[in-house]
Structure formats: structure tokens, C-alpha cells
Length: 223
Image (cartoon, rainbow, N blue to C red; front, side, top):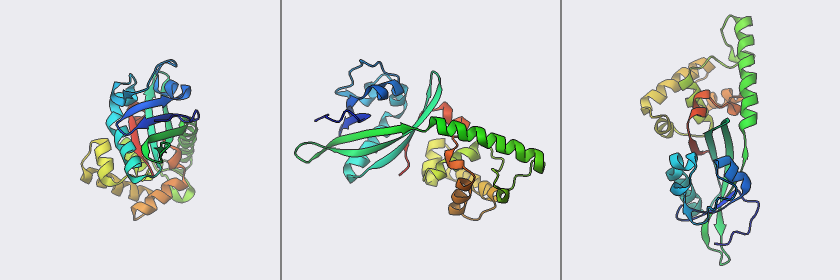
């Protein structure tokens, strides 16, 4: 495999082995700058994300390779200094013969934006509680008071996850997820999931990472 792109976050082959990671990527994953990843399987890399999500990363790469298309992945990782989140783009990597021999991955951090959005949402909720006696109104552009589970379910709906996928991620039954969705629709005063997503984005929920999701390793395809 040729690894000529110095701008890539990483290059992986078709068998779940890493062949290149730039310095920034190693720091994100908590690997020493001089650590040689070449030829190492994801499950062998001494980083929490790979301990927890190596199977998911391989599955994502296989989709990218088999369908020969770009995919976008959301990654959330607890770290020594708190947590961080980033969106990575994965595209098929072609060798000099024009054959797909792996995946090229690059990405950008969304941590700061989510933190800022979370602070703004909390301020918005406090203002609403003072002025409306705790009765949150969507028509006023405010975020309803959501339970931790409702926040998680809504987050994954916005990330284009289906009920079955959400149930698997959160270790819930599909019926429980549906119940949370019904509660969400009532709180946002809408009648369908598409309306729920539209209404939640209108108040900035797409930029808000629920606190409970900052405590676990997470990697999932969002588009």
C-alpha cells in the first residue's frame, strides 16, 4: 500500500490494519508521537478507542471499501482531560493499479462547538424556567426539558440512526426507544420523527452532545 498523503489522519488496509497515522491523530488517540502503527491490527493498538470500537471501525471500513463511497463517522472518546469528539470522513484508498486496497481517513474536532452549544442551551433553559415557570415552549424557540435517555435518543435520531441502531447503541429494547420517541414528540409538540428532528435542529440540538455520552467510547456512521 502506498502512503503518500501526509495530510491524512490515517490510512488502513482491507484487513483492519493501520499503515499510517499523522502526529495529530496519534495525540488524539493517546499514542506516543514515535509509536509505529504500520501493519498493526486495530485491536493491537494501545488506545481506548480501539479497545472498545475496533470491530465497529473495521465494519465502517468494510462498508467504505465494498460500496466504494465516502462515509462520515462520529467519534466520541473520554480522555484524561475530559472528552473529545470529532467527525471523520473515510474514502476508499486506491493503489497505483487503480484497485481499492484500504481506507483513507481524515477529520475535524467538534468538541469546542458542542461545549459552547451546551452552555448556551443551559442558559436558555434557565431563562425559560424564570420567565415561564418551567413550562418550556417550542414556539418560543426554547429547548424542552429532556431526561438523559430522551437526550440520547434525540441525539442519535439527529445523527440519522434508526430505532434498531439506537436500541443497540444504548442497550435498550426497540419498544423502549419508541416510547422515548413518543415522549419527545409530545414535548416538542410534533407528530412525526421527521418533524421532531426538524424542530430539535431549529433550537440547536444538533450541536449538543448529551453529557451521558461523554462517558463512553462511541463510533458510528452518520452519513
